[in-house]
Structures are given as C-alpha cells and as structure tokens.
Image (tube, rainbow, N blue to C red; front, top):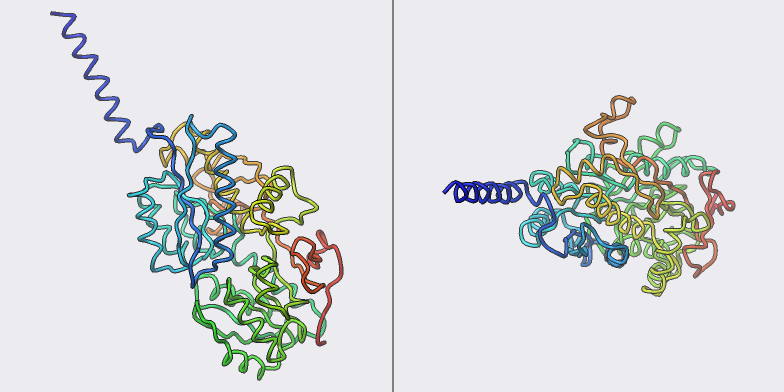
Length: 417
C-alpha cells in the first residue's frame, strides 16, 4: 500500500512538472521545427525589391543555422510574412505569426511604420523581436522588454545624409521629398533641423506611400530651384520619383541628388532609372572589401542564388536578425520569451555586419551613459557610408564611397554647382 502511495505521489509530481512547463510558455522546445517569424514587404505599396532581398537572406540564414545543427536539437523554420509595407496590416500579421503560426520570435522588418504598429502586439504577448531595417527611433525609444534592433537609429542615419549634403560645395537650399510614414516624416525633420544648424534652408514635400505619379511634386521642387535634393521615398516610389525628376531636368545628372537606398539594388535601379548615374545613397555596413568571413560567405551564397552582383545592406541585416535569434535561443536553452530576452541582452554574435551586442536594457539603462531612451536594446555599431554611382550601369558593390573619410575610396562628383 505504501508503495502504491509513492507511485501516485511521483505521478503527481511529474504531472505538475508537465503543467508547469506548459504554463511557462514553451520553457523547452516542444515541437520541431522551431518557428521564427520573418517580416518582409513582398507586395505593393511596400518596397518589394527590399522585401524580396530580405526574404532570400532570411531563408539562407535558415539553411545555415540548420546546417550548423539547428537550435535545441531542432531545425528552425522561418515563416515569412508579407507586410505589404502597411501599418494597418502589421498588428493582425503579428497576431497571426504568434497565435496561428506559433513562432517563438520574429526577425526581419523593413518599413518603420510596420515596426511601430506591430511591435506592441509582440511585446504584449512576450515574443521577442529583432528588427532588421526599421529606423524610427520610437521603435526602441519606449523601452519595451521584448523589442530589439540591429538597424541604425533614424536620427543617426539621417545625420549622415544631411551632414554630407551640408559639406557639398555651394549648397544653400535643399529640397526634401519624403513619404508620409513613420520613416519619412521624422527623417525629413532631422534633415531640416540639421541643415538649419549649418545655415542651409530646406523645404519638405510629403507624399503618400504608394504614389506613382510625381509630376506635381517634381514641378514644385523645380520651382524651388534647390542646390541639392534629398529623396526619402522607399522602394519603387524612389525609382519612379528619380526618373520622373530626371525627365524634368532635376535628376541626379542635373544637380546634387540623394536617392533612397533601394537604389543599391543595382539591376532594378538601372532598369527603372536609366538616368540615375551620379546619384548619392546611404549604405549600411562596411564596404565589401572589408567584409568579414561570415559576410563574404553569405554574399557569395546570396549572389549565386539571386543572380545579383552584390548583397544589399538590408539583406545582411535580415540574415543577421535570424542568426542572432537562433543563437539566443540556443544560449537560453529555451524558447521562452523571457529567457530569450535575457540571452539577447548578454549576446555577442559574430554576424555579417560585425559583432552584434546590446549594451543597454534591463541590466543597464541608456541614461547611465547619458544616452536617450532610443538606445534601449539598440545595436550601437552599424557603419553608415555615403556612396555614389559614377559609371552608368555599374553594380552597387563597386560604388565609390565618398563619405565619411574613414571609409572613403574616392572623391564625389558634384553636379550643377
């Protein structure tokens, strides 16, 4: 009889442990494969070229992680979700990834507006997100426990854009063409403020995402007679505006012209913007000549798979977002959200972009080093350069780096001064 009671007691303990594991929200990997969400705009009005690049990179990351043994004894599966670049779709999409697809974390993400709209859902449900290419400062600025970012802050990236414009010869008036989104509006404001600090006037023209006909805006910009144009339109809109401006005599070959980084997808750039030579662009990450071993391997695989001549910065970011998450799950020994967050806050990941780490979070507030809240769970070291196409039809991986001096490979060609 005593033996029977002992077995019943042991059975109760086992049952309790199983229940506890379930209540702890996947404390250990319960099912293979382990699913990780991957956000990418694959339909208009989102930046489809950027989304397709990110999708290819995240699937290469999935392959590489699994080839290296996976996580917690399981393969991973990256569940790609098409955001369409629409904030109104972001919340429902994040809900679906978490509640239906059962992802344990989310990587990727291109448009800031999608990140701003979707992050609260993930945070409320305790699912970690490592955003790859969402620049808006507020994404990390409200210090949410489960939100991380490896893209640069918008205020930081915009600073490179306006500082380069301000040091160009003869620049007294700048026209800024921006999309009315959580990326475009603050980026334009940062540029306006920075330029004003250098005594340079600027006028901003806002357009809605998905706009294709820019005839009216082109005429208004032309009437301003600017010395320099900064275009903050993502994806295909950036292509369309630039070529329409070129047709009107105010394109990259007519005046100093900063185009959106979607132009780094050189095949699409030259197909859509045949008059796009001499455009300046901002590029995240070090030049290909300075790639580490991980970046060189990923770039070779990516180029072989896509047929491209180079790998875009947002593809590298997307790849690393999945790699960081996979390493965090392994180091946590669990798919529990809190355990993954703890691992992310202590991580040192050797990615294609360099060593990724997060110095500020629950263990150290950014204010301890006199930094603003936007540095919470923010990778502090992404390199940002200004590059220029100087030969018609050239691939983006051979573009001249014109700023800053630490990465400079050649002098800029200034037009119309």
